[in-house]
Every structure is written in C-alpha cells, then in structure tokens.
Length: 286
Image (tube, rainbow, N blue to C red; front, side, top):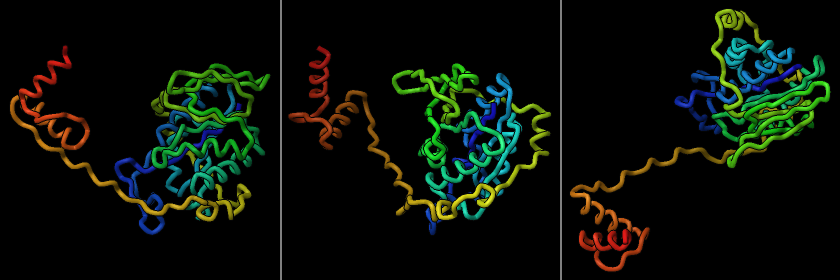
C-alpha cells in the first residue's frame, strides 16, 4: 500500500511575523516546526505501513528550509520525501497550494499508484482546513475529514472504514480507495524517533521538485493562482483591565451589581446597596 502524507512547515507560534507589503507570513529566518496535526498523520501512515506493508511518501511545498520538516518525518518512519520548492509557488493561498500538491500527487502516482492520501486537519498558521479537501476535489478522490480512527482497510475490495470525530460524537463511514483523509490528533500519537532513524534522517537527501517537474500551469501557482486578497492585517487591541473591587464580600457584590446595572447588562429597580443586595439574594434563594 502506498500512502502519501502532505505536511507543512509552519512558523513557531511565538515567532509569527507578517510582511507589511505582501500581507503574507515571513518564513525566512523564522524558527519553524512541523505542523503538529501533520505529525499525527505521518504516524498514522507509518502504522498502516507496518500493518499492511508498502511505502510512505511525505510531500510538502515551501522554501528550501522546509526540507528540515521532511527530514523529521523521515526520522519518524517515512520512506521518501519530496519538497516542492520554486519561486513560482511563493505566496500561494489554499487554492493554489492544493493545485500544486495535487499535481505532485499525480506525478507520484504516475510512477507508483497511490492508495491513500493523508493530511492533518488544518495548519496552525492558516487554520483554514481547506487544503486537504481541495486536493481531493482536484484529484476526484472521496474525502473524509476529522478522521480519528481507521477501523479497517480491504485492499482487495478497495474499501476503507473510518471513524470521524464530530462535536456530538463519532461517525463511522465507509469509503472506496484511493481516498483522502484529514486526521485529528486522536488518530495516533507521534513516536519518538530511534537512533537509527535519526541517523537515516540526517543522511537523507530530500527530493526537490519545481513547477516543471509536476507539469504545473504557472497561472495557477503562487500569487498568480491565488484569488484570495488580504486587505489588511492588524493585531486586535488588548483588553483593558476592569475596575478593581475591594472590601467585604457583600459590599463587593453590591458594587458588582451596581456596575452591571450601570452598563445595562442587568436591570435593577431602586438603589443598590448592601441591604438591597441582601434582599435580592434572599428572594432568589427562597
């Protein structure tokens, strides 16, 4: 079974910077990590390979430094790693990104058929959750989102049964193969890489592909292929501290009621004082 896992290198959440001219994330020179949800997808793929045999290929799009993220995935157990890196890919939104990754998967499948595509539920820098379904739409694959468990795979009948994590519970669904799954962290806990795996990852040379390697239309890549326009980016103002209430508990409660009434949050008739508050609470408790 051949599984392709799409991963993304994202800026460390504490070091996010925005280019004021392009309104895009600045990635060069910023500490980066592998998108956490994608690590769970890689682990799920490795577990499936250990059960069914086959191969795990990790795929990413980004600047040359993103090769580090793919090497980490190799250390986690992936067999091969491919990085789409080309200036033509720069500034891509989710539509252009899904196009490039879909073209890459088509190129991979032309050499060796792909049975399953896995992605994390979303990237922590964009939080859109659109790339996985976008890839599936372009490749004509069934898509199962928020997958928390793969119950069974029948390679003979080309069927898969999985559980989806929903707000109100879990949903059991069946799909044909090949399919694309976006997974949540509950699907598998990433393992600690063994020393041999770390050594292999350090020596592994990530394959670098450009737009010509995947025969992509330049008009659908990068900023040219991105209809999303960011008008402005700003940091929301911080919350101001509210009034500090001091004194005895009953007096503080009366002050709080007065403050809420003054702001129109609650309605109280008559003056609010300690005795007034006591009568209110007594009626409520009765």
